[in-house]
Amino acid sequence: MNFQQPAPLIRPVQPDVEMKPLPFYDVLDVLIKPSSLGATTTQRDNQEEYFILKAEQVRKLFVSREILPGGRMNYNVQIQLRFCLSETSCPQEDNYPNSLAIKVNDKLFRLPGYALPPKNGMEQKSPGRALNITSLVKRTSSVPNKISVTWAPEIGKIYSMSVYLVRQLTSHLVLQRLTMKGTSNPDHSRAQIKEKLTADPDSEVAITSLRVSLMCPLGKMRLTLPCRAVTCSHLQCFDAALYLQMNEKKPTWLCPVCDKKAAYESLIIDGTWGSTPVRHLRGLPQTAASIHAYPHCHYLIQMLSNLNGEVVKQ
Image (tube, rainbow, N blue to C red; front, side, top):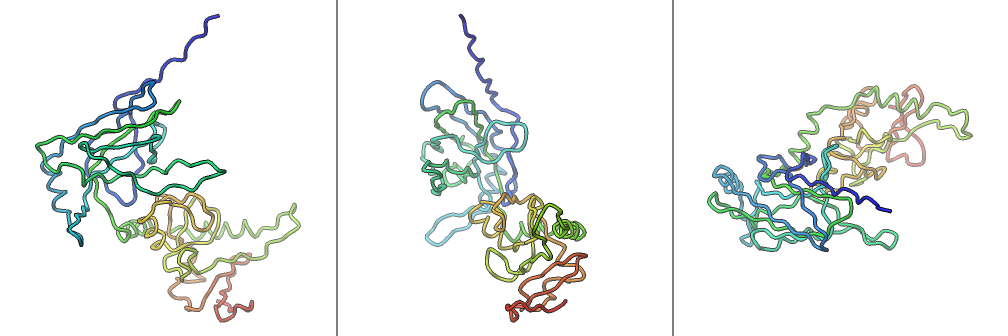
C-alpha cells in the first residue's frame, strides 16, 4: 500500500506577517520586512539577511545618542530585531525559535539573560522580546549590515524575523497616551456592581457588599490614577503610572490583581471612583483605605484609623 507523503510547508520569503505594536516604541522605518526563516532537515538551520541604513536614518541615530557614565553610548533611536511565528491571522507577539543564536556583522549578540522558572520539572522556553542590536550595527549609509541567525527547527512551526528603526518612549509619555484615551464609563462599573450583588437563587451564600481597596497592590501605596484592563472582571484597580514603570523595566503585562494578561492596549483609566458620589481619589481623605459598594450603588468609605470594622459614610 502506498502512503502519500504530506505536502511540504510553503515558506514565503516575505509573508504578510504583522508584528504586535510595542507600547514603549514608535516605529520610524521598516528596515527588513517580516521574512520567513527557511527550514531544512538538519538539526540546525541558518539564514542571513542584509540591510543598509539611509543617510536620514543614520542622522536620527546620531542625534538621539547620549554618553553614559563609563563612556557607554545610549541611543533613544534604535535598531530593533524581532522574531515571531509566521501567522497572518492576527498581529504577532515576539516569539523566539528554539536554540536561537544571532550574529550581527559577524559579532555574537547575547540574548537577554532572564528565563522562566521550571514548570512541572520541565524547562520552559524563554519569553520572546524585541532585541536592541544598535551597538553592533554599522551606523553608516555606505556599508551593508549582515544579520546571521541559527536555530533548531520545530515540526509544524515557521518563524519570521524583521528589523525596524524605532524610537524608545518613556513611561511618562506612555502614561500620557493612556490618559488621552479617556476613562471608562462609570455606568459600566455600576452595572458590574449590581450584577455581582444580585442574589443567586442557586447559591447558599449571599454577597451583601463589595470592597475595593484604595491601595495599589503593586506599591502598597495610595492609588493616584486607578487603572485596570477591560478584559478583567474584577473592580479592584492598580496604579497606572507604577504599572507602566514596572513593565518598562521588565515587560510581563500581567494584572497584579488576577494575574491574567493585561496588555497595554486593553488598559483603561477607571472612571468609577472619579465620579459622584465618591468623587476623585485626590478629594478623599488620605486616611481612606477602601470603598465598600452596596446594592443600588450606595458607598461607604473605610478609614485607616477605623480598621476595627467601623466605617465613615461618604
